[in-house]
Image (cartoon, rainbow, N blue to C red; front, top):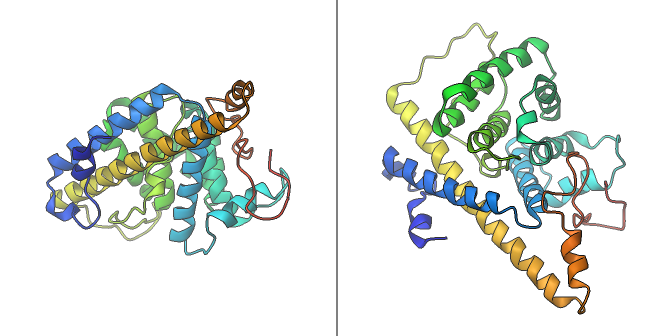
Length: 290
């Protein structure tokens, strides 16, 4: 990773001193670097996406005012049998694992949106789901990456839904724009603030439209979040690759190929409630949700 790119990506404190053009260039470079990682399709990429899903769920749970950490979230899913209740926090993890596991082209169907809304704690409403799907289809026609990021949050807000769903939708829209077969949890791994608060589409109170400066600041903030998340995802990919190589070189001669073959490049499967081969519960010897 070039040093200049890490310096160019602003953190939350330095963002105010950056102009929108510089932030957009840094975000484009970071996303391009992540795109190169995605297209290499290295072994363990499915485990990488699941790790990012866990990180995104942890941020979502914290923003929802809950206390579960990564270990508690993992246990809520791994230590229960398929079909058992995993609790509100566990459902949030399943929402992010759905994004990481299912093909990106299938994530914005009305059926998928209904399931995600329920996992994020909303009561599925056919009218809301239909309107949301229509807005997302319009974004997919001609919007670029910046428009997709802001549009995803606006689509969620227009239906009275939360920032969590905005992050989820933005990650899917960006993956589809880049032509990735699977989405990667990115914005969900960063705390996204500075977006206007959600309001119900049925509310009698109409919020004033954003000024041009507010729109620019909002776009700049989202691009900076996407850039930081992309760099973090690249770093995690490198860490996992190093760990994989260490495992391969530590096994007895003749068994390295068995280890390599056990790590499926695309991930373990496409079912969001099934776990990667190395996702162990953090306590006890309970069964894995596999």
